[in-house]
Image (tube, rainbow, N blue to C red):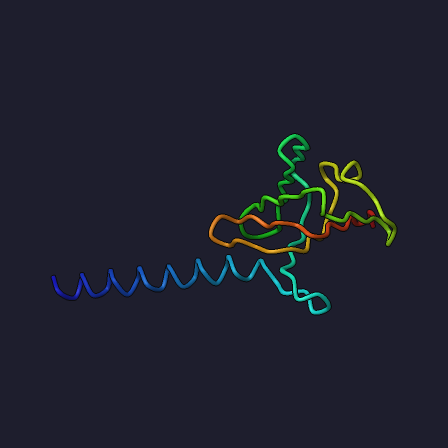
Length: 114
């Protein structure tokens, strides 16, 4: 019985470590700005709530929150949130709250299709 409890505790600790590593692996620091960086494909845009949901190849979906201070760009030119559409790839820079997979965006770059 004691071995079973020990094995269960060890398994739970390993699972927690794996989950925390996989979530933090999705957020990278941008080397130029020092901001958190999330990239992925736009799943949905809600302009009324000022949110964009992006999906990644692995890991959770992220909710990107933007406001009037958020700068948008496309092809290295100033842009607007109107360029952010479902299926478009974006790179978002800002402050991530990993516990709930949200990022307060300072900058959102719309990528051109390849």
